[in-house]
Length: 296
Image 1 (tube, rainbow, N blue to C red):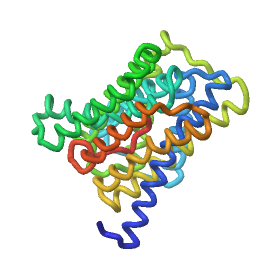
Image 2 (image 1 turned 90 degrees about the horizontal axis):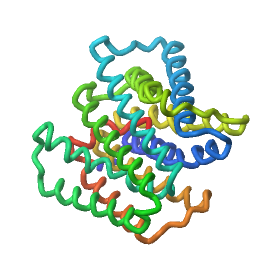
Image 3 (image 1 turned 45 degrees about the horizontal axis):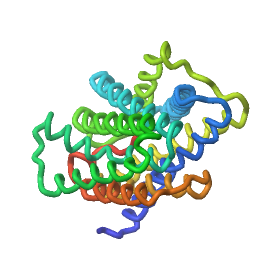
């Protein structure tokens, strides 16, 4: 690996991104304790983050994506929004550790979808990684399958949506992301929540502490990681960036256990290690290394 000062700077930026993304459950838990539901939390998060990002682009006079790129960017954002909906519902109805492990199995869905839809060859590495990921999911969820079936379902839906968005975005959007395309993707994230309003009306934070948690999610867990990942991945390359991003679930689980007081079952820990190993194996592959600058 190139250890030049520029490359180290890129790795540091991606590391900041992974840590910031990993802090999501911490602020989400604070928001939930102050009256907000997943729909209200995510709708307010993405609206506020979009306002921040578009204001920054206007102030910097940054060129916006072309009309041809708007549709794919909005659809990619809608996929990320669906992933966020599943992830935050899973956190709300099950343990953070279990939700994180299942959510991070998304590379397995990318492998399956790319094989089915794009005829990507299933190499030995991909097959081994797929088996590891699926085995990790079964192991992590097996100890609590009856009690957490709703949370498990939401987390797997999040992984499927996330994998689909990555696969679609990697083939329809420019190879190198930018803050301007990220701003359009952010708007796309709002689409699933607007469509679901009749069935899932949002509940907003009931006090200033809840709104502070939403603001922290919008800035520290959305704008900051998007900007640092885009900047870092442009220096390190997608493979190194995607590999380092596997620290995200590790950070989330550590915070859940140490600060939120969640128990960590041995099965969840073992399954999580298998899922992270699978992600590491697939991180350098074209099917999974392209766009981890998610908003989920």
